[in-house]
Length: 602
Image (cartoon, rainbow, N blue to C red; front, side, top):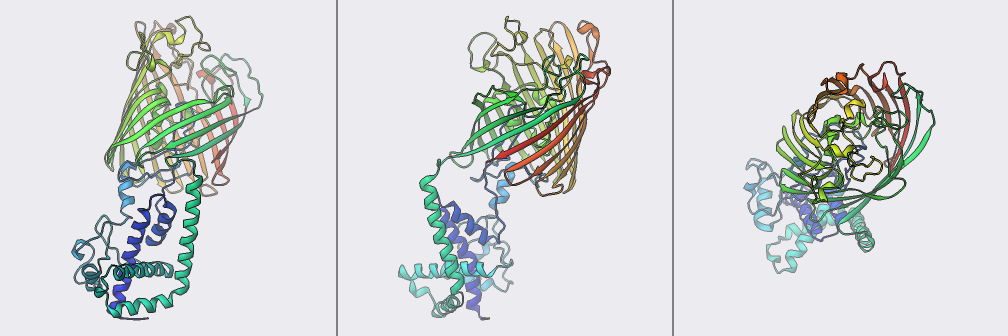
């Protein structure tokens, strides 16, 4: 090994000039592939995940891809809840700041600007010489040089290639007098020693340039990415009674749901999501309707469009600042699409097989069109605000319609992260439902295109009934998740709602759940889950309503599932839903539903 001060200078130049090469390649516009490869070499294979995925789901369905999208520094860092994960070490908006620390800062003109380089360091004079003589030193945005990390032989070769390019530039620009002969001799000797590695790297770059050019000529769009999801569901009622005590048909059903998402970014920090969806998943039950005559035990992916494809979701998210996202909700949005609920139940929201197990049911009190805001005060405190109006009503200028003059739901939420492994959310939702949405206009729910069901689409029939009255709901929720170790997490929620039927009286509605999650169970990316809870139950009601009779008994919801990650794009999830005393009536036999859900993503 050559042991001279010049060699020290060359090694330092290699580390820094490799960053310069990365800057130049990144500046070439669409050569992202080359940029990622160079960044991978520079950062010792510690890659930054820039893969786009979108989380957009209607309020009564699975959040198939969950998005944590920072708004600052031109970087979108996203997560996919289809893969089990620990809670992030920082809040999502701040992840961009951490990721940017792995990028280079602009050229500096003084070594004193590097905070981790001291005059007593053995390489200080070499670095100082490179700054003053050759101008080839760059650092990181946090003003560190990080000169004590190890490098591979290929990294050394890549840096050597950068040094050669830099020296050629100096010679070509008539500044050859500042290039020392001994430096040139050292570089030439190193070039000879690393001939094989240099040839390999240049061959790889040439291949990448050809591939990039081909991708550019055939790409779908310069601003839009297409991704999709297909769900096949096999389900059957094994045993149990309807809510009226009558036996249930035990026919096994096979159905599907398909989604195509167009994710568009105009500046790298915003995201426009357009979703097309078609399905034929008939719910097992709804409020006093369907085979079970109850919302209890509903599947998370149910919903029937009669095989017709339509616009299921439209949302635009853009930054107001480095720690604030704003959301314009066009149609089909729930509070989950405003990124308010998923992080509080990250394993089940995207893994569970029932609608109840996805999240606290109070989030289902509204959905549709409106706006939202997400702001991070710091790593420990987050604020979520949202306002949504369902149906076609926000677009109508007629009486009792419009965005603020009809049915709506408004949310305010604070999320506290006491440490890197836990999150706690405090949620308040206020909603209003006019009486005519339940048929007062003379149209049944099936014929009325503006019909919006009252309630949470889970729980007892009584909790989802408005007694043909305009209703105001004030709902409060406490939710949280605690990662005890990388293989086990405990979570859950409690929800309370005061449902006021204007002019008739009030009802109190409670729900709760405890969840156990086992990430990477059996295979990386797989997930085991167990839940026990109580779907929304009317615990107290005014004497003027239903004769003053609340739900008579307690019905418990048990659920177990195993989401097996067959490949990166295929998941198979068998699950069992067990509901005791359906519709909170102990005279009804327990309801047991079996499900096998297969998800294809592309």
